[in-house]
Image (tube, rainbow, N blue to C red; front, side, top):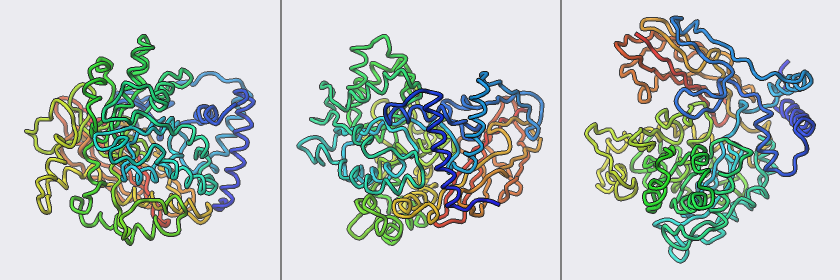
Length: 555
């Protein structure tokens, strides 16, 4: 007999207590919440299907590697890699924890990405902050830092040095309910300690060492945690630049080590410091940098540039019903238009990119996910894919004066199909990410048993497969499950843009847990086909998670 929702939650609490007790024995006493959060990934046993890696096809967390041989994809050869030998007592306890986690975990086990959000406090930053806090369980938050931009600084359209505090206060009020749904939500005090003022006195100011810039320095120099840090710029990049300048001045021998940790995601370049300092002084280290213009799909002009069927999820009726009304003080603080319409969350793609939905967006910006999809332009710079094959990207900043989407928007073309197509890598996920937002609004006020939680997608094979042209590629997500016991629907589809095979493949039984397709004919070099398994539950609102399968096809 399967435990009901409340039963599963109680088992989860028990597993959490056991894990905490065991951690204190196995790893020593824990002094702070930061220590606990840093140690938590060590207690999780990552599944291959949900491991996080950096770089295409890396799979660094997986416990198996595939062999590139002549075996068909349906019978791909896997060479096992033996894990380190563990003390038998440790193994016994880990087995107990893993068994309990089968009941207790709402989400697949994985090491969460570390993030730092820098923000200029614009009104759409305030809207993004509500969503960011509702997803705080998905990240290890190293800092929330107020910075300036070309639009906002102290004395010029300034929201105030402490503009984020009311949102943290509202978060504190709903926190006791949120942790019923996921115990990984950070405490309000933890977030308050890491919410700091950065470089804000002028656009691009980066001479002063500030509490915010020093927090970035401390996180990057922390030798106890070598996981990458996704540093987001919702506003200008100047506080990030100041932090890197401090490291260059005080720790020059560690610049490469620090650069290897950094992943940058900017919402435009909202001041000159990336070009003038970061690129010039840190360029040799090839830091992965995404600069987004696709955020326009969820910014101020959304009601003119995304398809009409997507606009429903931003309407006043939808926002009032799912977010604004009856969902506690944090959602009530959301700064929608006066009539309830969605206003703007232009900065949300910077952290939505790092939500592990199964689309593997952190492995390569080219794969695509809730934060958009990006193409390699130069060095390790990734920008929005412009559909015009003759387009030449600018050499300097990608921002309001040069980015393709913003330039096109200024032309005020009615029903602009080209602009809408340019923004598709972002808006194509609208229904899924808005329903997910609505579910988390429910978590603010409803107990576990009266809310919906996303399904877990589990492949019955490796995420990366190899096939020869003409072979049948068998796909299976039969092991997928839902923490609430909801029925699941399946949709397998080819995500053509990130694949190197230009043609379409026809997927058989695309609406079933098990599907297949015939590997296409390729000539010369190997080609890749990306297939996404989209699994949606029947809860309210319906929630979706994914598994991306990358098939390398050889001639």
